Length: 137
Image 1 (cartoon, rainbow, N blue to C red):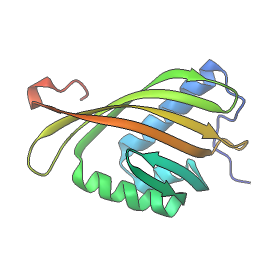
Image 2: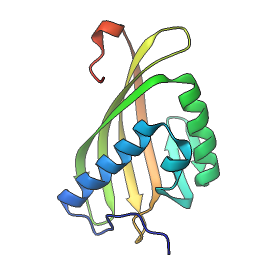
Image 3: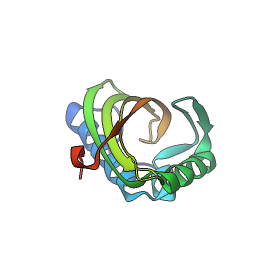
């Protein structure tokens, strides 16, 4: 059976480990690697998009990282329960026109018993910034 450690129920320490693993995977910009942390039928709400399953996750992330160059993400623990984790995050990227952005947001995650994320709900806002104002490098 497919598992992704650490497994629920989470402690603050294991929730923080799960967050760091997610941050590392997303910063790899490898859609296939990222998708393997989710259940095969995972449900996402990402801004105004609804995504279901690993195949759609890979498609979404492939398009995202084709447009968001020099992408760099930082996730931060917010709270947790037995099988849920709340995260605050920010990431920076430059678009095809050379405009830099910092995106701020919150994610709510729900995991199955095998440590795979079954649900991901993300609320995200973008802010135009100057390259000199970058914080994440």
